[in-house]
Amino acid sequence: MAQLIEMGTSRPLEPSLAYHILRYVPNLVRDEWVNIGVLVFNPRTGERRLRLIEDQVEYSRVRRLHPSVDEAVLRALRDDLEDRLDPEAYSGPAIPLEKILKKCDETLSTALQIAPQKGVLADDLDAELERLYSDHVAVPRVQSRVGQPGSRATIRAYCAQVFKQARIWDRLQKSVRVAEFTFPGDPSRLDYSYHRNGTRGFVHTLSVSRAPQDAKSLSYNVRHIAERASYPTEFAAVTDVILSRNNDRHRFVMDTLREVGVEPVPMEGVAVWVAKLQPSLLH
Image (cartoon, rainbow, N blue to C red; front, side, top):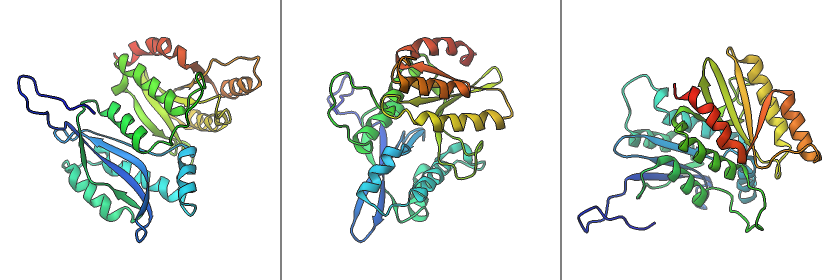
């Protein structure tokens, strides 16, 4: 990253954000690890963002590197760490982030290590989280031919851009657990959630080109949420392609989503869809 210079001086700007890489270390003696998450925070305000692996392809990569990995333990560690770092989870006095991280490092598990803190010249927590996650944690991308459909990470990155441009990013809950609607221990997540006019909406990304079968797990989650929520709900799935009934795979996804009331929204239509949603979220 290019070095920034403070206006009117030749003195480099101090790093404005800091971050830790989270590592899975199955064997302390061998000192071998794989990166599984990123924590980015603002040292001045305490505001932070946390992201850990959640897609099956990411867990599969960890398993290829460490065949004995227990996915259930990793998912539980993720949930525990998120709870500890959530400022709203504590009703008492605010606890400095450094103390929380030290406690996590001591008590969570010997299999999870928090790498030393590093600084970075940036001012957008969300953008920096995505960049660091892509550089240090995400499954390396194989050079693809031009026009090849993107992954869920690509769809999420585009959605985040549209949400921010529409000024509703801060109105969204991210990486929403569905266990409260299904069964305790359910590791599934939905990408985004929002509240408007007494209704709670859920938005999830779906790569039809790469994993159309994911529509079935999304349908399962939607069905349980709609049945068990004590308030009206609505659902949308952002897809990497425009669905066509002339394509068997697309038709399967369309019918699976329609059966449980999920509105499919192609990436190229997200901006228009968000423009319709925006007024009710900003008032």
